[in-house]
Amino acid sequence: MTEIGLLKAAGAVAFTDGDKSVTNAQVMRRALTYARDFDALIVHHTEDPDLVGDGVMNEGEFGARLGLLGIPKAAETIMLERDIRLVALSGGRYHAASITCGESLEVLRRAKDAGLSVTAACSINHITLNENDIGPYRTFLKLSPPLRAEDDRKLLVAALASGLLDMVMSDHNPQDVETKRLPFAEAAPGAIGLETMLSAGLRLVHSGEIELMTLLRAMSTRPAELLGLSGGTLKSGAPADVIVVDIDVPWIIDAVELKSKCKNTPFDEARMTGRVVRTIVAGRTVYEYV
Image 1: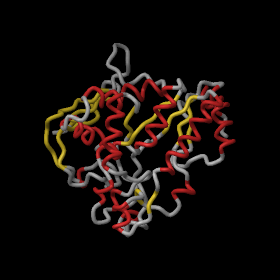
Image 2 (image 1 turned 180 degrees about the vertical axis):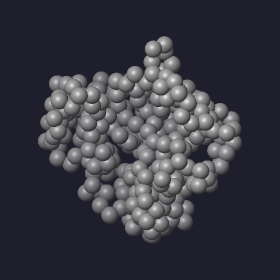
Image 3 (image 1 turned 60 degrees about the vertical axis):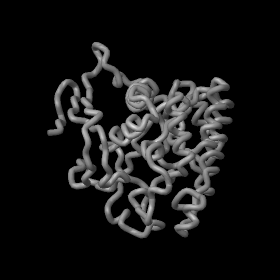
Image 4 (image 1 turned 30 degrees about the vertical axis):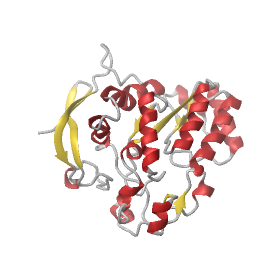
């Protein structure tokens, strides 16, 4: 474990192993217990690497038809269930980094109903895409955790709308072109997400699946609350970090126009409605769409 207390005092807002799961339950229990004494948040990637194995996409009929090794949803649910029991044992604060399936939502619901200090996020990819979007082995849609079935996507959206899921995250994980333009099983998982996150989320608003303010809260206000940051609000005295959005402007995602050095996006050439037209940081305009 790292020095959680000293780092918290120095300004760290959360502690995580990134996209790696802590497989040792004793280590995870100690981290939660130690973090509890400093009111520190533990963020965890819930995937059992042994169950993931050599899998490259969601386990099911579609993956079998493509001839690709699958990753069972149990790889996520088992790890989440273990973590929730450790939270109950330790009394620590816990955040599940990426929930992707209905079974995990049931575990999360029980934890919240029990009054545990548990929150969770879903990625923009998992609430707007499903495994069928992979189509003819499109490696830009190879992600970790993998895209799930459409039924799971709908359950995630409903959980976000009801408040069971606390936030939406970008799952921004750029990959070099040499690691993505390979056969699907050999390609690295990950894609950019920051630039397309809001526009992709607005698809759910325009389709009537979620309210605009619910989406905006899950992408700004709620994350700021959870991490103890002063952003995510327009209150007087708050940092003047603001975006101006035209929710009705149509546009097509062109990889050439993306600002990221990595151009690998699951939404390559997708038609979107709504985009950020101005970004203000500390009261100064740093981006403007013309």
